Picture (cartoon, rainbow, N blue to C red):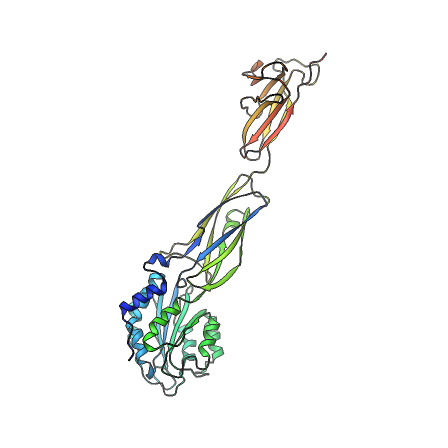
Length: 443
């Protein structure tokens, strides 16, 4: 004698099937959740990425399609008893799930096909519809499932952006054609509407997949064919199917748009199909364009797509990875010592014989330090601002020093043992050094 699975036993079973005892274990994730890298212009880096998918694909519309012919009494009882528990467990994993219920028999029966409840978020309405199922009719062994699957693909009224699933269970093969629906036309209708089929063969008749219809339909729609079960195990089989559906996983990034092309990303592979609840692995290549602004920090985001839909968590928030890309400054600062004006108005007899210099410095990002150093010692002056005018005097036997202010109101008078070296360092730590040569006094 077969028995319906009790709601308490079913709840325990679902915990095992979904691999969790709390809703947090239903959580999907994108790892790493943040990336921070530094790149030179024209440089790229590879980052490994893992997408942990939900155990049930996102935003599912799940239609229960039952063979309600005479041999299905025990199977229908099993599902009627446990339908609400099934729906609540699915909702725990995917809160925006919706459901519908439909049944089929065969030509000459009433109904030959009927949608008892179109897709709805109201689980009580779906349970009420399932409660109307009663085993009756059937006549010959093959039933009218091809007609039912074809019609349900459109009459369920799926949401436009949902993951569409038909959970189909029965114990007998089907006519081909069935009220005009052939196996090929049925597959075409399901594929056109983007419906995945979970087929649950039940013992009792000649077998739901006796002629290979269930195999062909589940293979073509990206669904799941469950091994034949007894009537008392239909609910368990339905849950097994719902937690073993394939899901197409891909990645998308707003980096190119957010950074106006300065930062681009590419993913390998472009997409992959895995069993939902598993992990998809990607390699992301992050590249800085040759023209990316040096010293600039760019911000952008990556998202995972499941069946083309952005992955969200149980609360509906988008799961994303934040990206911070620092473009390194690779351009050294400019530095130049140019002859400066003599504040006293004297005109030297030879070029810059008085040793007045203007310290010119610039950088594409920013200056950090401008100094005058001594080639013959470790001495370096106090910092200057770009454009300051100084007087440089060589005193080979003297003590290097920086006297401020210099004569005539210039910034400094610098005394050095050796030649003067203008050292300019930018905020990235890049340094440029040039000589400021003082000609020997004229004879």
